[in-house]
Image (tube, rainbow, N blue to C red; front, side):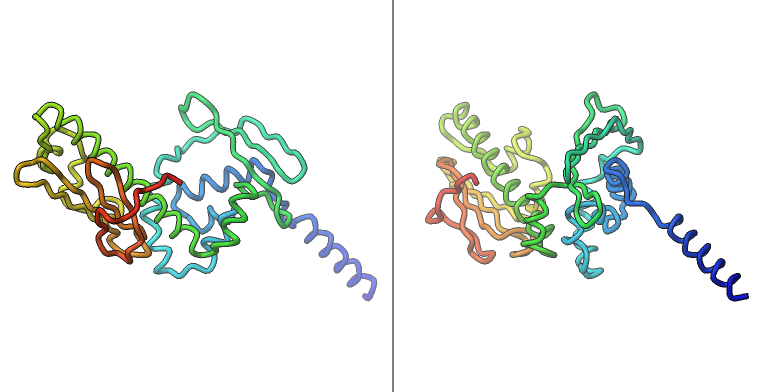
Length: 251
């Protein structure tokens, strides 16, 4: 009986070793990453990447707050992703994937960390380690601030062209929307986490535009002010900026 038990235990241990899941290849990890994000399983998807530390530990409320950003970012992932090869060099790998009907395949970088292949690189991993759970919130802020600068520069450019055609007079916001100079969404005053307001002088010889974060520290930190001379920016804890703010410097 003792020999039988020993034999059964040995067989069971052998079976468990054989059945143990194998670590994913770089290609499998990349496919798991994109498929999970496509299916809106964001936490699962990011666990196949260097961004896992940015989502693990987030509360349900925090994940819900970030979900619209994730949905917008990953909405274009197609249903069909075809692997076209992988190249492994030490602890780094490059996987080539063909996304649906895209003309050119895409190269995806991965690194080997803790016995797993993760989508991303060492630089991104270092940022995530430094910022932790704040990473995606910071990324949202930077994206919103960049969008605000682009929007304000866009307005300045169209005001410059308008003034050339109308003897130095500047357009109202309604004029710019009507002429297609700015998106119609700006009528609501809010675009991508920033609240915009434009003022045009009575004689239309000057204009100013302000953009402040809707929720300071979450949708943005910098407040912006713009006129024909350029864009100014300052961290004013959500209060409007003025012409005394420093000129915005591209990072």
